[in-house]
Length: 418
Image (cartoon, rainbow, N blue to C red; front, side, top):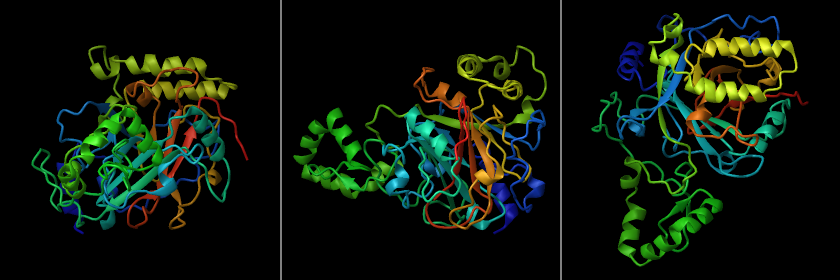
């Protein structure tokens, strides 16, 4: 594949995606720095390190901007699957701890220019809504090489070459005229997230990813709708066969518990390095910092001075752009920005890729500010985290469909478990 041609496409997609950080180092091998993950209180947290791309969320300006043919980065709502056919199935869709279907958190469009197979590349994050499960998840991540990990936070990677069955090889025009080549698999009518491979036994039209979602849809009003569909066999046949209608347009989802949907915009952190007066809207607007970070800090149990110093350094860095919800930096020397010393993984705590056996490298982290935008209450039992680190296969190994990657959760109080 022509790398220069790919770069032109990336430029035309600017604002819709996160690309590589340094155009001059496209061919550089990406490797995990063994020193990045060591718990070292002498580590210089003020070291800016590699350039970081910040993710901000905002309501989409156009209804078409979050369709999958636009390759969006987004948070909340439902995922926009890159490969619309080969979706994660079975236990991949549920919390390994409580068995509930996972809820979509966000997705990051992050193509890599060094390989033809990663011309399109998106990472998807899902999690259970239970704080109890997240606490148990944190315990599970400390287990070295378990036979089976039980996780409530899951990350999936999907990648496609430029020539693929789903999208044009030409870059999208960035308007409502962009078309899909195929409609994709039908999704669950309740959550709009996972593959709807189960039918309603009465109307044979509504589809579900699980029996639980079928029951929830029935109780919320599908019982009446189902009777109407059953009496209209012609409509049922049309809806069941013509999946193009429901897949090209945004699917109507019955669930009211999904998080609000946002488009994610990206900016380089270096743009916020200069001290800015109160006239600047980004820096001066500390709504998220006050309502989420500072309130949350009051409940944090800093047992050592090192944690207090680390948290202060974290706040100073975040305060440059307090509305950021994501920090992206996939490079050999990138360092995650840790809120606390406790609960950091060592190199041995990060597993190897379960598909190719290669190393995993840090790619991005999710900040708790996202919970503010999702409207999550700051109560004792509400979902909360200090940061969620996402590690992905260094080689971005190939394969059809979705490969599960690794998430490291750091909560407000951390304890190491063997």
